[in-house]
Image (cartoon, rainbow, N blue to C red):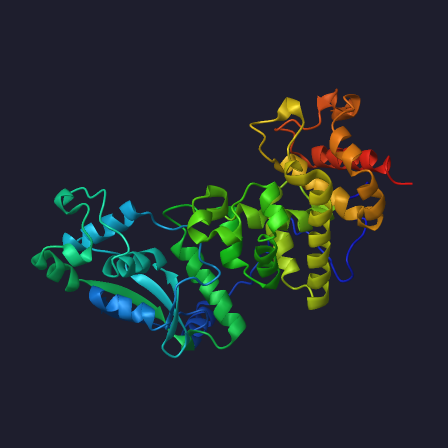
Length: 398
């Protein structure tokens, strides 16, 4: 059974093993001419903002704090407090980076957490805690700081580097330049996860669809992710959510419909290549894929409930859902959508019996290897698990 046996109209995917690194040679004169033309050159200006002006700036709605390529991570109060302590001590703070999307309207490319911390401090949204050198200020907010300390903070500045609108000649060029800058800014410090990098550098329409589908209530219940309705604070307590693992799971479902394209170079590159091409799908194709995902999730939840992606007893780890179950179940149930009513008639048996056949849980050609072994994550292993669920469900389809 091949995972992509029923492709959506217009859905194509060609995996590129190697990026094209070829480039024609050029003379010094040609290189100098390219430089003079200003190709791929960022136009910037610098600015400095008094700290006490930042709340007014952000309230003006002229500064977009959360463009889609930003990460979901948020600072806790200790880290916010340490930033304020740095201002008290006059420790140099790196500049923030802004992109001017319209005249005097800016996206915050780098510095979202610093701006938010300063804003929250002036608004009294948290009390200082965990200070290292000014511990006597722990428990205080801006309003009840000693006057001299408050004045000292007010006279500090946050500097910025602004990428001006004239940097790009078109919307497409603007998106590409923002991604280049974002990638370079995040090449050090806290390492981005593969999905965070995709979200930053390949934030097209299909990436937006994955983000949208990750909010599906049944999907979130089966993966033990907080629900969107529980609010951002609850969501940000979840490490998997902060790392965008929920969005990557959606991407995996669509990419693995083209399992035959998965090469030995690894899953991350496979997902990178798929998303890059899927961002060019037509509106019609995206709508069909959205419908397919939602119908698949609905059917799985109706039959298997919240324990749908829990592995068999032998590999069970505190009843946690695992990708080695999610990936094949999603592929097989997507293929069985036309037989939905027949499967629903037998949902109790399917739920009870899906791991009951001990012999089927081992792969003969792999020397009786346990099918759901946590380390058995190769393409061959996934294909074997897809065959397992396909053969199991066929019992209930006339």
